[in-house]
Length: 305
Image (cartoon, rainbow, N blue to C red; front, side):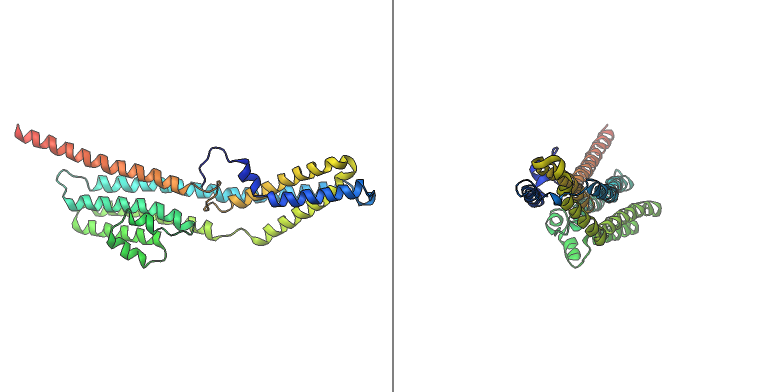
């Protein structure tokens, strides 16, 4: 996502600039034929493009609503990922917390939390069809990377590593059965969220529906100059361009919203969300280490007394 408070007009109209150039030339041609060559029989009743424009407006409205539903569902899913990521970090830290914990438990916490941070980045890049190896190498061990390289679905493989470490923690007695079940439920919710994102990504908007709307829109724009030329003369050109731009922008907006996992201004801000999750989880881990040190210092002072 392009994180800007205000999207520049150059970006907005840049998406339809070629269409507007052709429409302008087309409208100028019609008005030249009408005014200079007095071909008056090319005008048609304004009611014809009006009726067609009303029908296209309904179709575009339906498509925009469906596209927005896909975008909102994607944002809702990533909101749940934020909550479950924080829950996983809290569970791992609190369930394995004790005053006399050894280095193995500390390493277990770091592995789980670093993997979850890597999973968030990896899922965003996986949905954008981009390689995620660089973001993983900075956060995962060499052993984990050797395992993930062999897998096609890297986010799912990371969750599999989490489950395996969870079984090791149960076998070693770092967590009990009830705690293992609760953490596994959190991992299952993360897996469900990943599946929902893949469903949105892999379910394309019906191509025939998009083509029908687009062809109907072009037909409406082609008829529009003939309907207004009799009333506006040369002012027909900016009027046709303005109306055409409005319809084309609505169509482009729907096209952008229908796929919320691309690098566009309307994209779900997955990288920004992953950055926020990383910051939260690292603060949780750092605060827990400091708290352990304070407790140990207090315990040491108590025995010295």
